[in-house]
Length: 575
Image 1 (cartoon, rainbow, N blue to C red):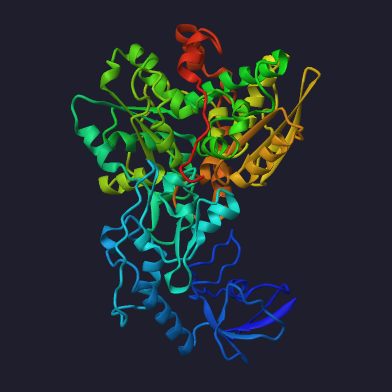
Image 2: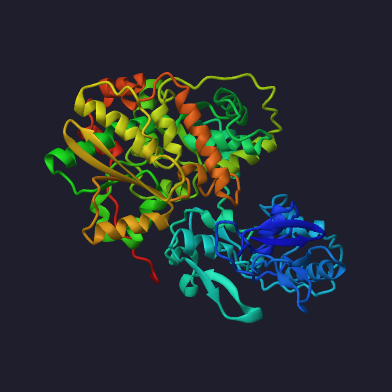
């Protein structure tokens, strides 16, 4: 242990701790830009500089390890002047159009400029004038706004192992660019959006489609229908002045009606449906040998893109099930339209998703099984939060409103799709009862829960031992896939979610720098599951009706026509 004095406060921390960590322990905040708690130390922005007694040069608090007896000053005149100069230099190469920026009000650079009272900049403003990169349906890059903190590279390379971003040139001219120097669509980017969470400014963000939504609700010839993904409710509360998970589901529905949606339904319904189809597909592969093992889940479009790009030789291991979003899109313009007596040509299907990759998925050419584009528009959680702000809604005053009929009921199994391990747990709840013909008394498969990178479990299905694994983040996916490619995987069924924590940490969720917030959202997911009367997908009464009236049987002809697909290798221009 080392005892350090920081701004006159003594604090004892483990040897090897940084000045930044010691200051946090002492209750002192040191500003940072390049530092990220879940990434390796970079120490390239120097905003965190401080004075260390006995040293001539200022030290970067995020990188300098402490020693016993160290004395540090974090807010001396010399330190304040250095930080102001660093900020002024950064701002001299950063566009000054904050009012037009998507991150206005939630920008770390803007906050620091206000905190250090940057009123006039002695340095000349020099903007290169690079064009926006809008080459993907999901993510937009603005090179001019990049401050070269390289947190996006950390998220993409260290956590996701995609390496879609890198550094071009050196020194003053160095800048973050897509791999191979082309557009984002030419790189191996899987549009998971984790770079958006990492970026402290507005250099990279979701393709905002709020104007398209407003045009749709204003069109009297359109019937605007929405589906809500399970991870959205717990996080949207953070954007409307509530604690994580505090927003009641039926109050949320009332808010969506205020935005102009004609019908409000739930993706959890097709999450339950996915379990029925995927569970039977797994059993078919296990008992009849129809399909390769291990079978991978196919709910996460960022993961699908990753598999198509990096492991095209293993695509046959993917479940053929579409994601719940796309199953919903196919059914809303067939089954639901028929039940409601609405012309499917008039239905405008909007999904509210925690995920930027869902925008890409909805635009895939395979996703038109209904005879139309199955999902017309995808709004992220953040976009809906902005719509609520625009509408001026006070959620403490709204009266609860129920979901509309057909495709609005769901079970706890559908809810837990929003957390890493949730798809696996939901599948096991149903597969166990289908195989054993016995009631599963304890539905909680806790071995597959939590923020651990890779989790595993073994389930006894009438004497057949089924080994399963769960991986979240694409770095974990890579480890599991390398095992399969080498012929060393011991598993029968593998769930993979592209984002840390699963959908609750999706690229379209409220911005967060820490996995602690993701863990909090996961807890809320399981609280909701535990409080529901039905917790197994096959118990959903509307799912039973769907099969009786329309699909007839799992993996049947109509199911394959509407709910299943196949994926193909992605041949990138440069990769």
